[in-house]
Image (cartoon, rainbow, N blue to C red; front, side, top):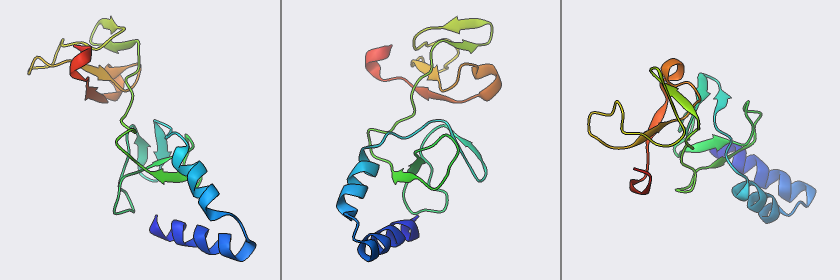
Amino acid sequence: MRHSVVWMLLAGGLWGLDVCSVLAVLSNTSCIFPFSYVDGIHFSCTSIHSDYDWCSLDSTFRGRWRYCTAKDPPVCVFPFTFKKWCFRQCTKKGYVLGRSWCSLTHNFNKDRKWKQCSPQHT
């Protein structure tokens, strides 16, 4: 990933592009989750081939990416199916620690992707 930034800076200098403007647009563009990249589907930022977490700006990685920030957590998907139930908000059902959680896809039974919900969404 670092090489991509170097090439972008080099290309910007050679063609007279305003590199700061290009970088500003990329840094303000939202991550797309899930996205597919080399080894599979990613539901959150990844550090594959990079020293830092990054995300794709396209649902199928096409070379457009940016580094992740604290504002890029994976997003809950509602409604979602867990076992035989359908949830429209975070739930504590099935979590042994009694904390609320949500699915990152519409079908938790199939994809098994989840995250803890914030304390405000108990």
